[in-house]
Length: 299
Image (cartoon, rainbow, N blue to C red; front, side, top):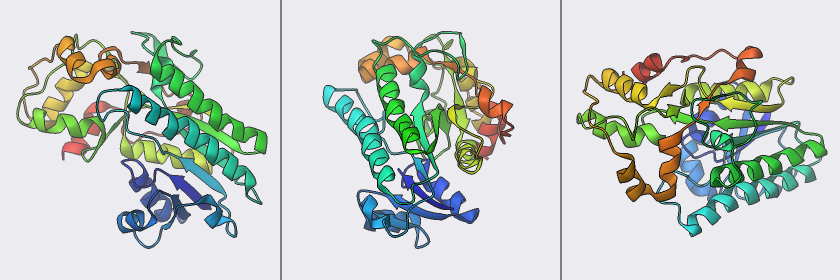
């Protein structure tokens, strides 16, 4: 299959492109700089800056990962606008562009986030759970983001929306920021430590995205999280064990709010998300348990 990937040079996109090529798919990456992307992805991935560059060779499927990093600092008004532009507006333009291809792609796999559920405490959240409170920024953002992706259904595309949790690997994401403090023995629970963390090993997320792409029966919403969410206290203890370091030094919630502002609410509240639909439809996780995932990463 000829697969178009957005966000192909990112933390998830790079290994995704490599795995797609390994499975025999042709890959094109839509990017702001084709030269820089080609240097990162290699010669067997086609890098383009405009969708119409594929007019003579339309993609058969698209995996849409593009979006400004939510975890890269305080959520100023300018950064919130960037989050909306890079998710909602970019998805709108992508869907419009895909609709102009002849023939059109068969499938769109579009990233979303578990922020769709908002702050829900201990409530187990499957794909059937309603959205969170409308005053929460991440709820508003994810709903608008998913609404734009769903428009592709009107153009005949099979659409899967993947609500991604905390993606684990050493070279990026939340774990990369935690790695050094924990290696130095300075890690520990955040706030009360009772908040839930819905995590997924990056290899499982890549496998899930490709499984959805290749499975013609897959459609609708899927939670991109491992089957066993854990509390922050459990997570920090498991990371300490994987690194053979203590994990006792707590970070008070008020300190995190001073540093991160509104973004701290995501870390201090969390969601208990379960990937019910993927499990029911037969997807097999390589790392369903946190201890095995962290051991593989640390090893």
